[in-house]
Image (cartoon, rainbow, N blue to C red; front, side, top):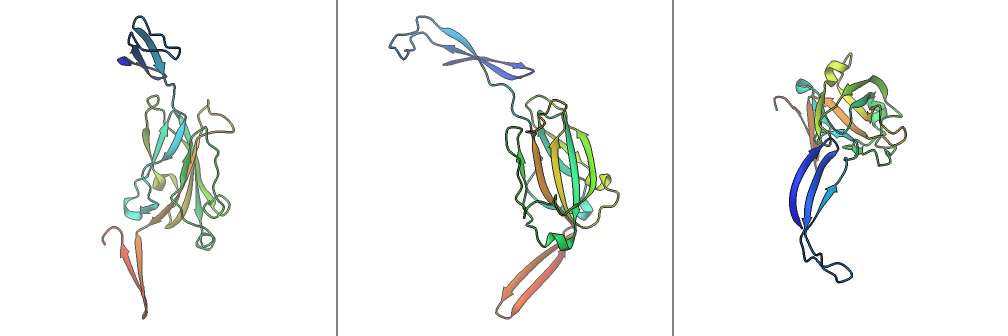
Length: 201
């Protein structure tokens, strides 16, 4: 195959390829002359997710959460605050994301929908170039009336007007809003605990 060029369109990139003369077919015959064909891959599936893979948001540097999207015009964001007592029954996981073609599911011990109190629910515009990843900063501190130290469960859901009602792109993540880092060391003599500030060390 001889790559013959590339054309940008509103529905992603189309490629023109030339099949050279002499290429044998399955039946044993050869192509008599070059043949140009167009190869189109179509749009990527809608996607929403978070930038990075951490769960700790330092208190003094809480500018916001990086939200990534592909082919999504609008995202619904729900933030739940989880109390310390409820958090004892949960596992703080890094979260997951699902395209519009995937089935959305969160294990009971990793999710916070059932124990958290909704402290914010709203939408942000994320329209960007077709099939390109766009990063939008969601100002968590500014969105909440009072950003208290603790654990937050953040759920993203595609809210575009063209989204499928049952299979929309979604994502979830735990966010620990704190300025404290704790390290423990155990030995035969007991346990040593070190508490430091994330901002000053």
